[in-house]
Image (cartoon, rainbow, N blue to C red; front, side, top):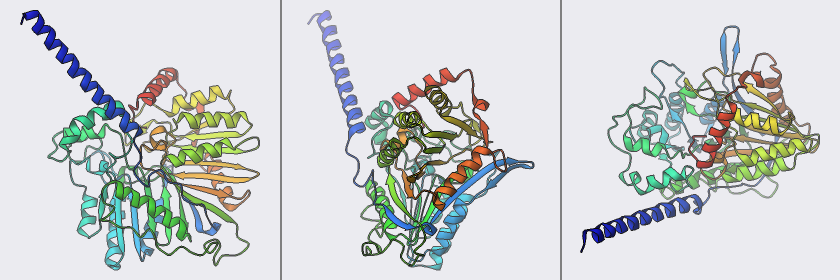
Length: 499
């Protein structure tokens, strides 16, 4: 064979190998962005009607005063109360659950307080079934043990680290390559690279960093006992202690608790632990129709409807509720990240129909002591103001080094109010079946306590009643916004982002 033919044959083989690799890569990419969801993921529970007295709006607020910054924290106080009162079972699903932060920082030991409360209650009630579900971020993706989780295990409390690989890929260009290569080698091992998430955390392996770049998570923040359901935006994370958050505690609704338990059993099943950790998804036996609503309550007390939503169902109901808003309605949004294009279109459409739209956003200025560049909220806010011709109003939460980490929306009008609150930012990653998320959707009568206290929360922040909670839009308006808008759109298109 001539030398020329040999070279041509080798080149042809290389081209064929390259084509085969590209076909394999493309197949993995397409399948993992369109594959069926694990059973029980993307769930919409029934609407359960309860007396207003069974619903508590809980807010954490950090804000400036003459002496510095004040932190008014209520969410974990309510969760600790629910743990102390539990008699039958406790299920905690928490995204960030650790005490790691940078060495020059100092925070209250939030994660240890929660850990000790769970262990103490388990010792007091040995028959109490306690289960903790969390995300692999707390072990730096398998690089090291987590002290809080190890203490729970030593106390006989099962801990499930959620396997998010069965979920669809949020960063498909990267994750397809990861699935074909680094995934097969695992993450465990002795870390040797500095931990960029927190300098006081143990070192990480290269393989753990490679998994981190997939940007997938069990992002839920839920506590369930036999009497109480708490759904919130707050993490049991020391470095997140001062964040401003929002959530609800619900009591007196066995049906709602059953729905929440089903979503957590689905998370366990997705991780291959559905048969080894069994939650009481049928406890108690379903009541007679109508038996749950108002049982033992004052007949004159207003009723509210509450339902559990997870993953993509959160977006479905958000878009439906925004689509129904019109002239005379008031739309309030308090949000850490706003970037979902469908949500933005509905906000603009509602404003065009005459709804009054007001947004309180985190300026995306800082995270755990590190500077951020304002993406996505600043370019998104500029776009909404421009396209609405100023009809949509924006104020920035007046953050220090902490974050305005709430994820709450209120739509109020003459026909009543709808509230969405929980773990989900209004972004593709949080609303498109890519992360595990849990929200509560609440329907309340017009003029009810539930509507008024939610609106009072927003009015307090918007009007700076008692403190300078928020700043005018111009405080973070900047000349570099067009460049940041391009960056945000590129990140959004290709999934190369953490929001």
